[in-house]
Structures are given as C-alpha cells and as structure tokens.
Image: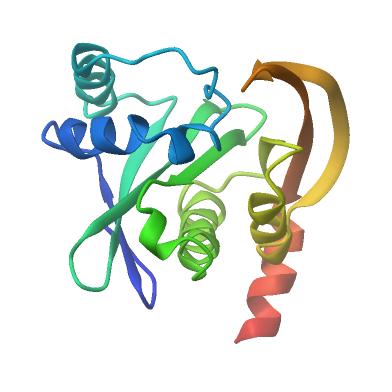
Length: 182
C-alpha cells in the first residue's frame, strides 16, 4: 500500500473489475481515455484484464486509487518497466466523475512518482496524454512532468484524430520538487 494525504494506492484485486467496468461504460469517462474509440467493452474483457493486472508481473504494477472515505475513485499504473534503462511508463485515470477537478489525480501521481523514484530507483517516468485533455496535462505539469514532444494525429477517438503529447520527469527533477516541498 502507498499513502498520500487523501488517497491510498493499493494493488489491484480481482474484485476491482466490477467497478472498472462501471467506469469504462460511462461515455464521459471513456472519452478521456486513449482507448476512447467508442468501441463497446464487455464485462468479460474488463474482468480478464483485471485478473491479469492482479497477477505478479515484474514489468508492471497496477493500482486502485482509494480516497480517504474508503471509496475507489480510479486506477494508476507503472508499466513497461525497463530494468536496465530504469524507466517506466505511467498511466492514471479517475473513473469517479464526482471527484474530477479536486486534485486526487495530482496527489495519486505524486504518490506513484515517490514509489517509482524512491523505491524502484527509476531514472525516468514517461507518459503520453491526449492533447484534448487539458485537465490531465495540467495535473501532470503540477507533478513535475515536462513536455517532450507531440505525436501528430496519433489516436482516432470520438470521430476524429487527436494529437498525443509525450511528457516525462527525471529522478533529479522529482527530487528537486520533493526537496522544495519539505
């Protein structure tokens, strides 16, 4: 378990599939995801993915974000963990729309970055984010991510092509932020 002030980050468990399916079935939530192509998703597909996420995998860690009242609100992960280059890809999504814009994603991101840099001793954490998701971009920038580039017309979703922005944070950048907040 990983702890922030208002969130607890715990490993995914098999039972999480039910909540994930509910979130993924919501068009407003699905629209914010890279997979937001409008393709219907079945309970079986979500259950199979969550069962896989709940298994031990040295190249990835999958978490459920729990807010202070014990209610799950989203998911986060580090994947494509590269043991030699010491980098990993980061992902996060808040499925509970009632808490959008309240800073939970930013806090959860900070908790996972602390885990990545201080416990896994990674050198870099990177991500891609759809250019049409300004709230996520702001959240990543608050956490210290910097823009690395743009993948033009990278994904087709919601009836149009969307650019993806590549972002990353290096360990020394994280440590500077961490030191200044103490």
